[in-house]
Length: 410
Image 1 (cartoon, rainbow, N blue to C red):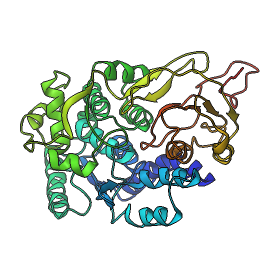
Image 2 (image 1 turned 135 degrees about the vertical axis):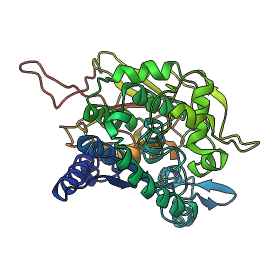
Image 3 (image 1 turned 45 degrees about the horizontal axis):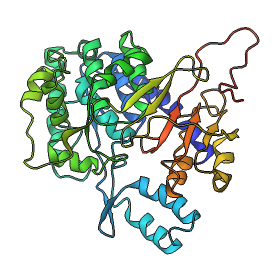
């Protein structure tokens, strides 16, 4: 993160999927349990299972527990923002070091509704992971018990002959998208769910995300924009509670099948809610956390995450940087009201479409999160905060038109 090594991140998804596929085909597996950890491993495992179409199930390793800094729960995102705060003279080096030492107290994926927990939510609603399995935190003793049940389920799937492509349908894909919108999930879900749909042979495009998000209320008050961590959501009722909320809102395709042999509607009906919980309660917004925008800079669309803040428009001067590193070095010269443009960080330009968490977190740490906008052909981390438009890239080019410069400025 924050280095040229991030260029490998998105591409690693394809390598992981290929590796799983090669292993399964080479050893002539009859069925599989695919174990995933953080970010790209989740969509990669699902993509591989759909290619192989063997009776199989995916289990996510689980979220890290939150750290404690003072009287607050903290995650890795707080560390990135603290770097900006220290740079702006708002936090001492000693406090930054203390925060860094406590933010990640054990194993597991990043603790907010960032990319890993977003995709863990989506894959349960997709039906490829058993409902209630993924939201169990990594260090919770119940995770081992859950893993044993998943092993038994894999054998049962083989006996029943239920395969991933029977589970992954247009309806179950829409359930997954709705869960992302309702929980204010990562913009990376757009890239990953599109890839999953492609492997399943399901027609899906970027506009489907806007359509689904427009009709789905933002309900989960989760970090980055909200107050609670993924562990808090588990305590509130977990991903099954999200499914139940979608069903109550009439937004769930109830008949979609899951690996348990039950429909998602049946699973949602059995969800238990912890009395008095606030993590997945009243709607925070009438519409979901993802918006697809189009314009002269993004004729084929870009992705904006609107969960957690109210500012819906921005106008200002646009300093242009040719890399994330250039923008990071110039952060002290970025002023309130600016529209920061970072180009040449797309699939071809970087190459690899790296995440921009370093710059966005630094801006928030300096106190500019609500007064600066950002546009990029790169990606955002699920922990990104503020008015940020990303994924601005084109699928094709006209004769003589450069694919490298995908953002125009005046």
